[in-house]
Image (cartoon, rainbow, N blue to C red):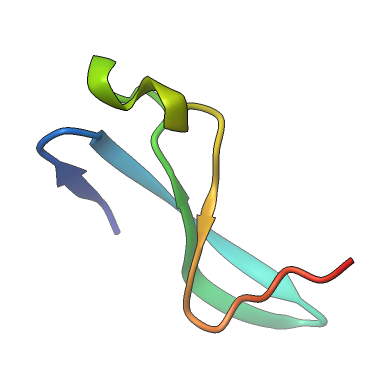
Length: 54
């Protein structure tokens, strides 16, 4: 899966494996964001039921 945002650029998606269960495209990032979106470089976003716990 892939998508392109007009101001962020092309997104790359990741499938997460948690305790043997795969959550397809549950995380995404912009490996080469456009200049206006450089603050998101090296950041990963999550969705599809993902929670981050300490």
